[in-house]
Length: 321
Ligand SMILES: NC(=O)c1ccc[n+]([C@@H]2O[C@H](COP(=O)([O-])OP(=O)(O)OC[C@H]3O[C@@H](n4cnc5c(N)ncnc54)[C@H](OP(=O)(O)O)[C@@H]3O)[C@@H](O)[C@H]2O)c1
Image 1 (tube, rainbow, N blue to C red):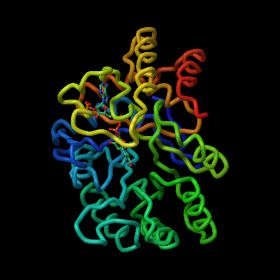
Image 2 (cartoon, rainbow, N blue to C red; image 1 turned 90 degrees about the horizontal axis):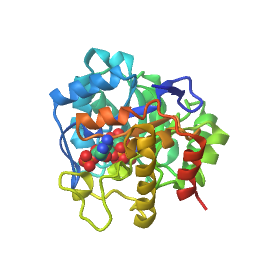
Image 3 (cartoon, protein in one colour; image 1 turned 60 degrees about the vertical axis):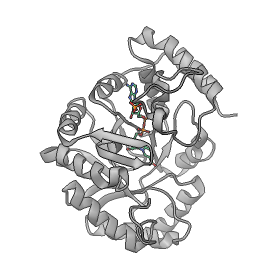
Image 4 (cartoon, rainbow, N blue to C red; image 1 turned 90 degrees about the vertical axis):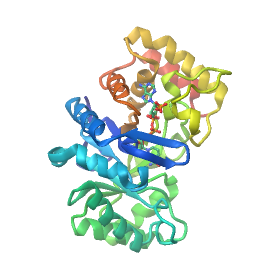
């Protein structure tokens, strides 16, 4: 396993981050079904740590809080040795204050997450999405409260447009608050929008970039075929992630991944993960699994380095115009 600093912070994270959104039994969103119980999770998390992963990502939203609970139990005494990130902001209840980035919701959500995770502190606390109703100053103040009380070591944002993250950094700087350490965003070989604005903004400000769904929800594993329905039991059989893929290009990428994989003795998905991890603007790539065997396969990408020629070939298929 290789490690990076998280943006310009001093925190060191593994280049592969374990996406714990699959831990627990239930639905995160309609059709997005998770089925890893506490026993299976304990084995999976131990394997991830043995492989050098020190970074775990969850949210109060995932599997109605069961992801946090299951991760906390699975980590057990190892919790102190790893970086745990969680999030708030997406709707977690029926009332208007069960969502968003008000000071009320942020502080209450963090208290609840700590209880579910069974820990006194979270290493990175994210705003899971943006909230157009709450002034950024209020969100920044609530984040600083968490830091000052030791409930969070770093604060961060997720799915924020570059301009909004830049405003947040400006407010935090002006107020003498700890800066947002990173923005967690979607990025894959078939979804490279962040290269337009967020990547240059991050280079200028030192904001870290953590990416999720680098397999495009499993599409880049190569298990989906043109003109055939998604195989039963796979993600795309019940849930299509947004933003939607441009299918012609996406299948051309999969064709190339399938061609390259045997050369490196891996599967197509690992080539996609290796390509993503090699982007210099990314601190860590969060990957998801729905069973233990996928963890073992995906870990084969940990030290995989593509040749310059293969890297450029993949890059050219989806380079931003
Ligand atoms: N901040 C945010 O808004 C946000 C949003 C999404 C995700 N995330 C984070 O990112 C994590 C990962 O997201 P994701 O699950 O969408 O990522 P992903 O890595 O693109 O997709 C994971 C899915 O791909 C399939 N898969 C994984 N490895 C495979 C393999 N070796 N062979 C075949 N299929 C394989 C599995 O689905 P099936 O087996 O079910 O087909 C697995 O559940 C989440 O747990 C969460 O921590 C954050």
